[in-house]
Length: 271
Image (cartoon, rainbow, N blue to C red; front, side, top):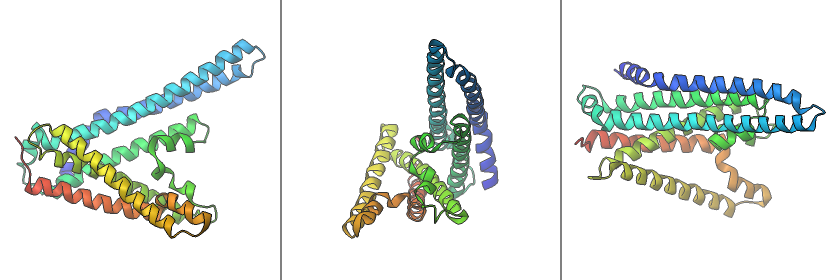
């Protein structure tokens, strides 16, 4: 049954998200070609020609970055909307009448959503690598945050295949944690008699605040027992190592999963 649910989720999502990824690929190729052509004029002895080429490259890079962010954010919003409507909207009536375990519903939606998020992240990373000439650290990090470039914070002596693999695993765990956090927020929001969407948004903000407070407390404890400048640095950067990132990702994923399952199993109320 899990396979059938995933197949249904895939069919419902690929018609929008696959073209979105193709748009990113086309934009990156067009930007790369345009920049290479403009760079030839940038080195020209004609100052006006060089100035116009520089402006053109800047406009192309800004347009590319804005388009990529728009596609990624739009894809994430679509996945959230898809979860809400198919689970607690009109489609939810049919879904919850099927002889399907609630665990299968949650897992199917989480796996398909994680696949698309990771796919978009990979496509964006490869396109940014092409456009930026291999220098993607700042570009990619600004879009996705620290979990996506965990290996950067590992010293060269410790950087090996195992570390890179575990950093990727930690990043994937972080993706599942974010997906389940959204699912738990939406699920808890359904308990509100009115303004379910606003309630869901409020629960999401509350979760984010609690997470920040918890991670801040851990940082303070590390700093309190820190020894020297390196200890202080560890207090600020501890969550960028793959070990704590993996543990936190698994804990958050489990907690938010249980919240989502509890609401679906015991508190479901589709009006």
